[in-house]
Image (cartoon, rainbow, N blue to C red; front, side):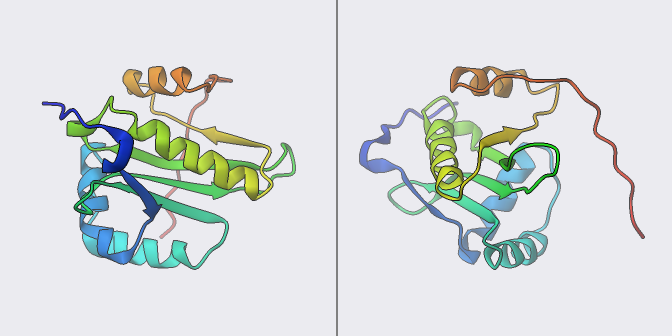
Length: 153
Protein backbone atom coordinates (compact mmCIF):
# COMPACT_ATOMS: atom_id res chain seq x y z
CA UNK A 1 0.00 0.00 0.00
CA UNK A 2 1.44 3.34 -1.07
CA UNK A 3 1.10 6.03 1.59
CA UNK A 4 0.06 9.40 0.22
CA UNK A 5 2.17 12.24 1.55
CA UNK A 6 2.67 15.87 0.77
CA UNK A 7 6.25 16.89 0.04
CA UNK A 8 5.76 20.37 1.51
CA UNK A 9 6.99 20.35 5.05
CA UNK A 10 6.80 16.62 5.65
CA UNK A 11 9.96 15.55 3.84
CA UNK A 12 13.47 16.68 4.73
CA UNK A 13 16.57 15.81 2.73
CA UNK A 14 19.91 15.76 4.52
CA UNK A 15 23.24 13.98 4.39
CA UNK A 16 23.16 10.46 5.77
CA UNK A 17 24.45 9.88 9.28
CA UNK A 18 25.57 6.75 11.12
CA UNK A 19 22.26 6.72 13.00
CA UNK A 20 20.55 6.00 9.63
CA UNK A 21 22.37 2.69 9.09
CA UNK A 22 19.50 0.39 10.05
CA UNK A 23 16.99 2.07 7.71
CA UNK A 24 19.51 2.29 4.86
CA UNK A 25 20.15 -1.46 5.19
CA UNK A 26 16.42 -2.16 5.30
CA UNK A 27 15.85 -0.14 2.15
CA UNK A 28 18.69 -2.02 0.43
CA UNK A 29 16.75 -5.23 1.10
CA UNK A 30 13.81 -3.79 -0.84
CA UNK A 31 16.09 -3.77 -3.91
CA UNK A 32 17.22 -7.32 -3.15
CA UNK A 33 20.68 -6.31 -1.90
CA UNK A 34 21.45 -8.33 1.20
CA UNK A 35 23.58 -6.23 3.55
CA UNK A 36 24.05 -6.07 7.30
CA UNK A 37 23.85 -2.98 9.47
CA UNK A 38 27.55 -3.45 10.23
CA UNK A 39 28.47 -3.50 6.54
CA UNK A 40 26.46 -0.33 5.91
CA UNK A 41 28.06 1.37 8.92
CA UNK A 42 31.58 0.50 7.73
CA UNK A 43 30.86 1.65 4.18
CA UNK A 44 29.06 4.83 5.22
CA UNK A 45 31.89 5.76 7.61
CA UNK A 46 34.40 5.39 4.77
CA UNK A 47 32.21 7.28 2.30
CA UNK A 48 31.52 10.17 4.69
CA UNK A 49 35.27 10.86 4.80
CA UNK A 50 35.56 11.10 1.01
CA UNK A 51 34.45 14.36 -0.63
CA UNK A 52 33.97 12.60 -3.97
CA UNK A 53 30.94 10.80 -2.46
CA UNK A 54 27.61 12.02 -1.17
CA UNK A 55 24.80 10.07 0.49
CA UNK A 56 21.50 11.81 1.09
CA UNK A 57 18.48 10.51 2.99
CA UNK A 58 14.88 11.66 2.83
CA UNK A 59 13.10 11.65 6.16
CA UNK A 60 9.60 12.25 7.43
CA UNK A 61 8.93 14.91 10.06
CA UNK A 62 9.65 12.34 12.77
CA UNK A 63 13.10 11.76 11.20
CA UNK A 64 12.14 8.28 9.90
CA UNK A 65 14.29 7.55 6.84
CA UNK A 66 12.15 6.63 3.83
CA UNK A 67 14.71 6.95 1.01
CA UNK A 68 18.38 7.34 0.24
CA UNK A 69 20.62 8.20 -2.71
CA UNK A 70 24.38 7.80 -3.15
CA UNK A 71 26.54 9.44 -5.82
CA UNK A 72 30.24 9.52 -6.61
CA UNK A 73 32.30 11.92 -8.71
CA UNK A 74 34.25 9.84 -11.20
CA UNK A 75 37.19 11.38 -13.02
CA UNK A 76 37.60 9.71 -16.39
CA UNK A 77 40.01 9.87 -19.28
CA UNK A 78 37.38 9.05 -21.91
CA UNK A 79 34.44 11.25 -20.86
CA UNK A 80 33.99 14.57 -19.06
CA UNK A 81 33.65 14.16 -15.29
CA UNK A 82 30.27 12.71 -14.33
CA UNK A 83 28.67 12.10 -10.98
CA UNK A 84 27.58 8.48 -10.96
CA UNK A 85 24.50 7.40 -9.07
CA UNK A 86 25.55 4.32 -7.12
CA UNK A 87 22.19 3.77 -5.46
CA UNK A 88 18.74 5.21 -5.08
CA UNK A 89 15.82 3.65 -3.25
CA UNK A 90 12.52 4.97 -1.96
CA UNK A 91 10.60 2.85 0.53
CA UNK A 92 7.96 0.92 -1.41
CA UNK A 93 5.25 2.48 0.78
CA UNK A 94 6.25 6.00 -0.31
CA UNK A 95 7.00 5.60 -4.01
CA UNK A 96 5.35 7.84 -6.60
CA UNK A 97 5.25 10.75 -4.15
CA UNK A 98 8.08 12.82 -5.67
CA UNK A 99 10.70 11.74 -3.13
CA UNK A 100 12.98 10.12 -5.71
CA UNK A 101 12.77 13.24 -7.87
CA UNK A 102 13.76 15.42 -4.88
CA UNK A 103 16.74 13.21 -4.07
CA UNK A 104 17.87 13.24 -7.71
CA UNK A 105 17.58 17.05 -7.82
CA UNK A 106 19.71 17.26 -4.68
CA UNK A 107 22.34 14.99 -6.28
CA UNK A 108 22.25 17.03 -9.50
CA UNK A 109 22.79 20.26 -7.56
CA UNK A 110 25.68 18.71 -5.61
CA UNK A 111 27.24 17.41 -8.85
CA UNK A 112 26.88 20.77 -10.61
CA UNK A 113 28.50 22.63 -7.71
CA UNK A 114 31.32 20.04 -7.70
CA UNK A 115 32.02 20.79 -11.38
CA UNK A 116 30.56 17.64 -12.89
CA UNK A 117 29.52 17.64 -16.52
CA UNK A 118 26.63 15.20 -16.10
CA UNK A 119 24.93 12.64 -13.89
CA UNK A 120 25.22 9.04 -15.04
CA UNK A 121 23.45 5.98 -13.71
CA UNK A 122 22.96 2.32 -14.41
CA UNK A 123 19.72 0.49 -13.77
CA UNK A 124 19.08 -3.24 -13.80
CA UNK A 125 17.27 -4.27 -16.97
CA UNK A 126 14.45 -5.78 -14.92
CA UNK A 127 13.61 -2.52 -13.10
CA UNK A 128 11.13 -1.21 -15.68
CA UNK A 129 9.43 1.20 -13.25
CA UNK A 130 12.80 2.75 -12.41
CA UNK A 131 13.53 3.24 -16.12
CA UNK A 132 10.23 5.09 -16.56
CA UNK A 133 11.02 7.22 -13.51
CA UNK A 134 14.45 8.23 -14.84
CA UNK A 135 13.06 9.05 -18.27
CA UNK A 136 10.29 11.12 -16.67
CA UNK A 137 12.83 13.28 -14.83
CA UNK A 138 14.91 13.92 -17.96
CA UNK A 139 17.40 11.06 -18.20
CA UNK A 140 18.09 9.31 -21.51
CA UNK A 141 19.13 5.71 -21.99
CA UNK A 142 22.38 6.11 -23.93
CA UNK A 143 23.42 2.47 -24.31
CA UNK A 144 22.90 -1.14 -23.36
CA UNK A 145 25.81 -2.98 -21.83
CA UNK A 146 26.82 -5.93 -19.75
CA UNK A 147 28.27 -5.64 -16.27
CA UNK A 148 31.12 -7.97 -15.43
CA UNK A 149 32.51 -8.72 -12.00
CA UNK A 150 35.49 -10.66 -10.74
CA UNK A 151 35.83 -11.44 -7.04
CA UNK A 152 39.21 -10.60 -5.57
CA UNK A 153 40.15 -12.96 -2.79
